[in-house]
Length: 393
Image 1 (cartoon, one colour):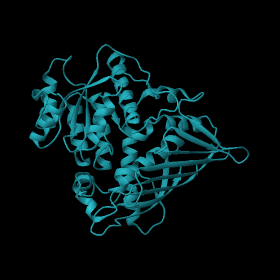
Image 2: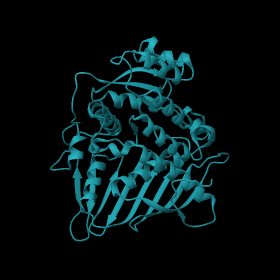
Image 3: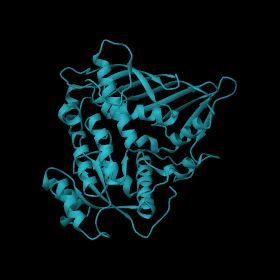
Image 4: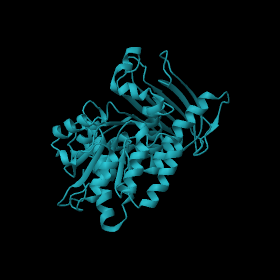
């Protein structure tokens, strides 16, 4: 990925991601991929021994391994500027996203958070005010927006190649929670716990990615929805499956399918966007391919690294054509964008919008999507406006 290099790396701290956690290791691999970011400290676990073991595994000195995030922010702020961390990566369960981010901003550090941004929509709205007061940067790892072919699809829609958008179908299905005994894993237990996950499991974990992808590629916004969510497996308090009908601000209709009980599915995120001139289709499990289809000529297969592409696509590619770039590379594109934002910000207190990672506005819309779908599913009313505040759950 092309960016402006500097003689020094951007220094990162991490909250969460201790031994046994899944997503923390992915974040670290992504941050490290382009050699632009260095992990210098962490509060990796509420279990301090786990945190120490993680630090040792990562070659982080024990003096930069902290028992909790508040201590980390306090102690890091006391270090000389060339040593202290510049931003924190938040990779905890959902209920900790807001307090960690709030404490980081109040201590003067930038924040890159795993999604969803917060535990509630009200927290996300409050967080926006905290960000503005702090003068710091905020990014959200909506991973799939980092794929080169997602950037290419976004550019082609923006260029009018599809004509007017009329329908969007987006599906994110998995099968890893299909059985009752699947709940025993560390990754499952907190996602199914309302005290740590929030009001939704499936929509909060993966449905929000699908909604974000639909809005990002189409350039449209959801304005109405009709939702049916439920726990398919007996005894669960939160949804593990759901279907949402959508209406967008240009009048287009949409369908969003999200499931974690679809037996045999791995990480089946795919999207189809239909316009008056053409349609496009992208699948996360075949990430280097984007299809454009027409009524009056053969379908076109667009491959990453082959021929001309949009500038944003080119900037996100690392390998020659035929060499797959996947999940970690997409994650790394977001980390690279955020690192560039920090570099620009340190020079001019401004950032180039063309290289910005998803931010607080996407965070608020994501939390609104989660709460709007839960509220709509509980109601006997068919269509509900997409609200950005005061949702009655």
